[in-house]
Image (tube, rainbow, N blue to C red; front, side, top):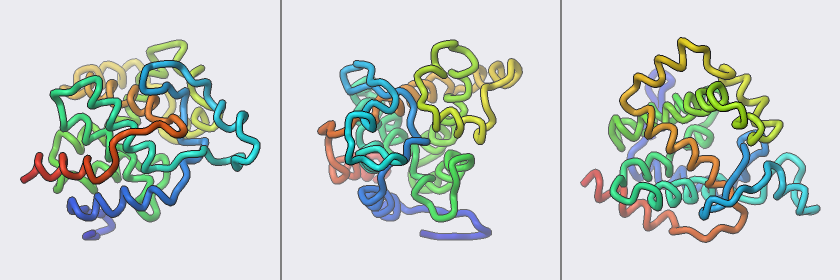
Length: 211
């Protein structure tokens, strides 16, 4: 891991180590919206907590690594010929694992950190996944209702729903459609106990892409 002028640059080995460290960190409720399982069935926001009396009130019963692997698996299922999109799903929340990075800036920090190792497209999608959330909240009346209360609170930190001008700017981005697909997979990759391919398999894909 290289740090220069406060900016972190990760190698592929650094990315693997940081993702692996996410196995020790539970996802906070504030990071979650309405989730779906891999088959698309809706899971009510907060249902995992209310159904588990032993779960801490501020955490979900799965980790950052679980969420990364599930999001990547959902994207590989939905776009099997686009490994870069799946890898973007794998690392989209890596900013949460960087020291000193908060929810408001985790997308930009994560994008900057992986750009040198994974390329501009992957970094661009990582950087846009929060903007895609803001866009969907603004454009779809039902979308906010799919978010847990704490996730709605984090949305305010991230800028809230997009204005009309911001929506038009987002729609003109070449990566807008892919960013929206990533965001929807982000919502789907939050299922307690879902079995998906492990980190070792995904890192083989990453290394093959950037050999």
